[in-house]
Image (spheres, rainbow, N blue to C red):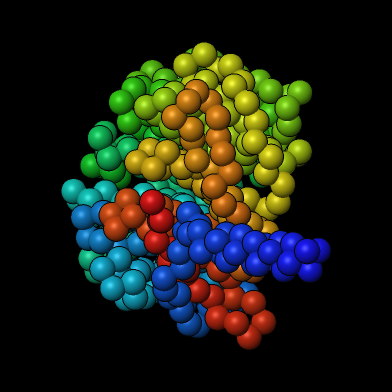
Length: 341
């Protein structure tokens, strides 16, 4: 009887393991795009051209922009007219690419989106880095200044892409910012005050800070952020200690925290699937927002490749793209994941 019971338990255990192995994860790796000719060094950020179905990737330490066709998932061009590109904006109406570059003179470089001819430059303060483009107003917001400019404040400079002129500066009382996010259906914009463990709330119409939300008891060195605009939740990654703060974007109240220890540089919230992605190492982390209140369930932890901390979700065709650095004899690549419902 004991032998029969033991065999039954073994069969049951094998069945459970097989059952678990057949459960699909939140992401399925479907393709790897090789980026030849790159040396060791970091990527920074992606930017999508939704009308032209192209993806731009800033190869910061290789002084290049990699251009990928989203229809074929193939590398189609390499733009080499930059020195240390960090982030980008793309005006689909005017077909112009804006590259934030701090590799020489700190500036925004304006390229023709078809020929990639350099059309002009817009000067910035030191450490021109983070940026975000608003297609509704055709304004491009660029973080610059701060510690590297020997200032105790940072500027978010406002560029009008219709004229390619700087039309304003928003002063942030912090010597470093890492991410900018804004409401599509409201006037507010959010940026992290890196070492202060705070978030600055900005009125884009007034071009001024209207509130500061501080969480020094929760952490500091605030990095990537994501915004769930429909449900009014702002996600902020604290690097010290490693966690994600979930903040009510109406009141500034801390709702909950999610553990997230590692090296992470991009946060993405997809309102279609109600999923939060943290791109980094050793795992790409995925949370699913529950239909019941503010519960965020861990949907998966996908092991990631060498220094793969840069990513973007492209809603059409509903895929996640992750950049993986060149290292040793291994080529740099972009990994393409299908989002599994």
